[in-house]
Amino acid sequence: MSALGHYLEEAGIPSVAIALIRPQAERTRPPRALWVPFELGRPIGPPRDPAFQRRVILAALGLLSAPKTDSLIVDFPDDDPRETPDRDWRLPIPASLDRNLDTLEEELRALAPAYAQSCTQRERSTVGLSGLSPAACGEFMGAWLRGEAPESPVPGMSPLLALRFAADDLKAFALEAALAGGGKPSSRQLGDWLWDRTTLAVALDTIRRRLMVGDDERGKLVAPFFVPALRVKP
Image 1: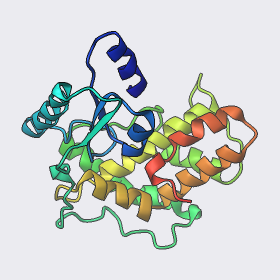
Image 2: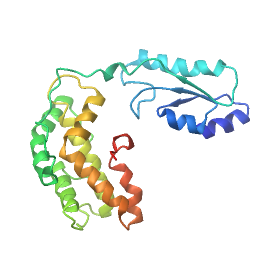
Image 3: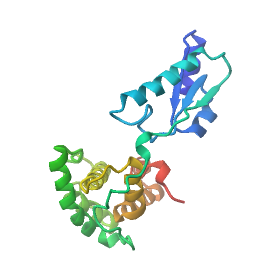
């Protein structure tokens, strides 16, 4: 988008971008950009908060009246108001201390009641991309982790694509289970729990690393989808 902004400016059309990753904006040097300290996927702030989102949009549009320079990046002054941790939130299951890959399917079974409760409370779920149940997703991922080469459990879908979609379903499954315990955890709280305290996170990162060093070029392309870049550990 930063590069597109320069083309628009050359055509006489003022442009402004909203940047979520400041180092990236600094490298690409957009004509005008508002950097916001929000979670990826939330460029104008938290959902269902139109007053806050309006402030972000107006701050971005306000940059259009700034004097023209080669590149202008302005920081939005406020954090996402919903990123304050909720002290009343409780983990859906006890945190896995050893996070041993052998316990992945056990962890998923432990999360199942909380996930079912969450679906009842919220009357919806985002699980279903793969077409498999969470338990079947766990079995399929477990086979990959054991070094097997399982066939795709989804007709017409390659094993690699089925694995990616199963991983997305398991991430949604765990996060939705975490919403069942009361309180209103922030998205950062949920992310910290998932990526720092579950066996599922270790499994996802293990698969990502294996695909990155494997011989399958398609696997290398898919690997980054398993773990968000900001959650990748050295």
